Length: 168
Image 1 (spheres, rainbow, N blue to C red):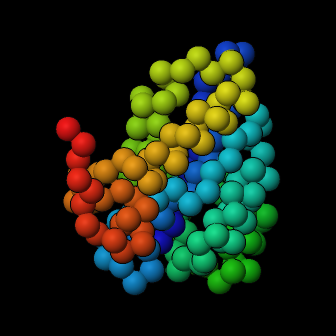
Image 2 (cartoon, rainbow, N blue to C red):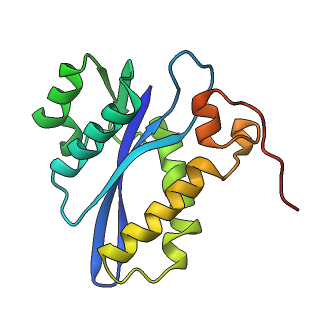
């Protein structure tokens, strides 16, 4: 099962919009993985940046059985839902106003903003892109999660459920 959501990223002269696609569960593996499979920044709330992230996730990570989103216009668009249907993916949408249906990705936004975005002066999209890219790489590959028994999202996604040794 995969999920996606959009959040805003404050920059010096306004906002950018960030979409992320996250694996809630890897095929054939129990439990959550929380791995970010693809993401895109945009200066508009159009549909195309969401479809681009979906294309990348499908190309790099295969096809999930279920894809969960909220009812935002980007995710209900024919471009997005058509891509899911063409790949044989069942679409699941949160109830209106039910952000807790996407608790994993909402937690991702909180961590990203408090651990990276709010700690840097994001002058523009170029800086935001670099900061977010570095943090997501760290989040996926290096940051252990207590909810994943000390594994990183990449380890949980690949089935390597051996907790990392902590550096003192």
